[in-house]
Length: 224
Image 1 (tube, rainbow, N blue to C red):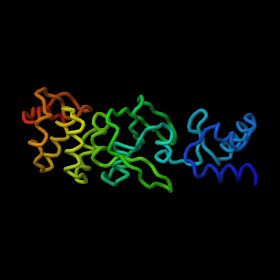
Image 2 (image 1 turned 90 degrees about the vertical axis):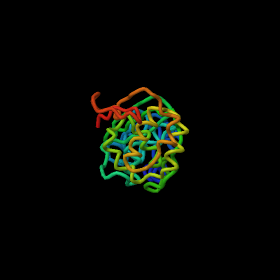
Image 3 (image 1 turned 45 degrees about the vertical axis):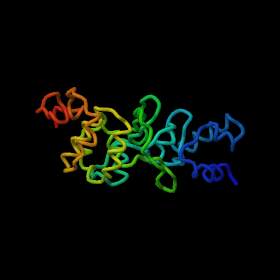
Image 4 (image 1 turned 180 degrees about the horizontal axis):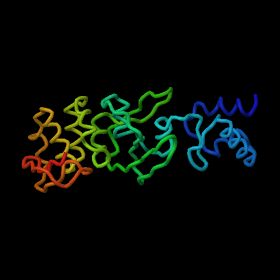
């Protein structure tokens, strides 16, 4: 079997691989470098960044394999679950590490999350990819995506799961914003969440302007 066929046969089952991985097939490191450059030139492989490659063009597929641990979240997860109609231009992933972004057929954005839960492995393009559920994806979106974009996804949530997540996080800024939208949706959630609602006023959408009418119940400035 030629190196080309052996290479493709092996790495089509691996979304992302390194030069060291190639070196396991081609023992000569200098030739391994020349070989991957040739494969990229011929369009058989793609460079993600220095020393990291893939046989796939799909940034959503490779995103969580580039940086670990990470999971698909925000509008990317909501779009994956078809909870929103808008198709995001960028791919968003939560990571326990530092924020980071790179360009690979678009931009892949990694944002830090202190709350690393609320995701599971989902089938995508014959691979298993970690994806946030709708509830966690909405929570992760605050401060990253304008809230009016994700408001649509509230129609697809499980109320009790969302309440459980908010109580687990215990962060007043998150509880107040999500609680307001849940109530706006017609759900009676205030009594379940009021323990985590402090008296400090904050703006509803961190990405919006600073002015708006005050909501005394949720201690929010409604700026969207």
